[in-house]
Amino acid sequence: MKTYIFDLDGTIITNGQPIHNVIAEKIKQLCSSGSVIFASARPIRDMLPLLPHELHNCLMIGCNGGMAWQNGDFLFSHSFNPEHFSRVIAFLKEEKIPYVIDGVWYFSVSEINHDFHNYMRTLSTYEKEEKELLSEKITKILVLDGESRTKIDRFLEREGFKYNINHHKADNLFDITPQSEDKYQSLCKLGVDFNNAIVFGNDENDYAMLDNAKISVFIGAMKDYPNANFYCRTEYIPSILGEVTDSF
View 1 (cartoon, rainbow, N blue to C red):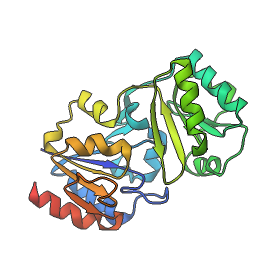
View 2 (view 1 turned 135 degrees about the horizontal axis):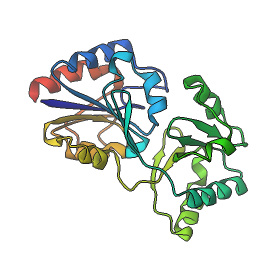
View 3 (view 1 turned 30 degrees about the horizontal axis):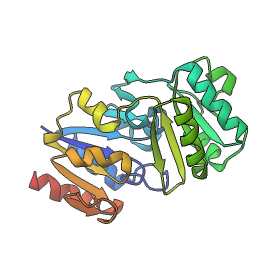
């Protein structure tokens, strides 16, 4: 059975808006003949509003491999060591760096305001005060100032914290997640066979999946990722799906 794996933002999602109906309908059709998986830097909470309900039971990988969800339940969810997490947040506060904290389902935002906070609230009502959220497992820190990357890297190295960091260059922000596994490694642990997989991606956090796929489709230019089998823009995904499916 063919497996179709889709990144969200910058691949089948543009400007953080729900998936276009034409692309959604094409992906729905794939479910009858194959397995459909979504893999994103977003937590599951923020993936679901972007996809139609008919696709909500598909396997989903969130937080760049830090959590997995299928048929309404979490399969796993990695979380930070509470003491280490507290030291990271203390550093962000000291440096006045805006952020978002993700729990398994809820989120909280920094006291330093950022426009992205309001975008989060358009996706979900699952917001808590930071003090309240800290009593739960924390799955991701989203740092909303990309210019702070170097100083945060130095801090993490000094503290000896080895985390997974994914920089979203287009938006100039980055994720910090506690697990060492990426999307590809997490999917392999769940038994996904990349020898029968068609992968659609657009960013560094998709490279390992694209590298190991039977067929890889890169949403972007060859100069950004030279190893794909196909290249296209988001609006051409329905057409390219027909082409790659026939060639598989």
